[in-house]
Image (cartoon, rainbow, N blue to C red; front, side):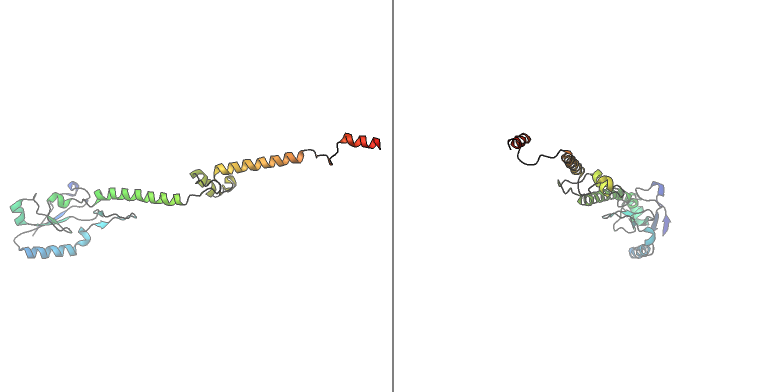
Length: 213
């Protein structure tokens, strides 16, 4: 059994950050190779196995290969018969044999994570926007939803005295203040007006009746 490094870490395809390791088995039987590979997979799982991305997003199936060492196995007979560029490499954790380039590639790694994370982020923003919209206050007078500005006015601590009635939109509250001001002005004018004369008789008729008497 020989240990070789078929490709450096700098030239590996997407997602591979550590130097790969290859086990080439020679002058042995297929059962022995299978048993040895099974031992390698079990004993070295913490080194070659990718991990789940540490993210709060849901639905992420991509795997993080940042700490994973690509471990490849093949036999000397396969290399001699088909060549190193043929489908003769099996990477630990995968079922079938691949070409060297495909075995070193991580299509389920960073290249998959980026669109999945972007899609999950967009869905999360939509969900938050929907939840926020469901909480948006409604004016008790006209039934219209508050604008963002009005919502902020009525909920920001310390601005309640400026916002006025927090159950009204800005338009209805402005109309309410205008009606209140008009009613106050009408009351003031009515209070300042001279009193009406008492009785049904006019002053001239009252004087003429006194003279006749």
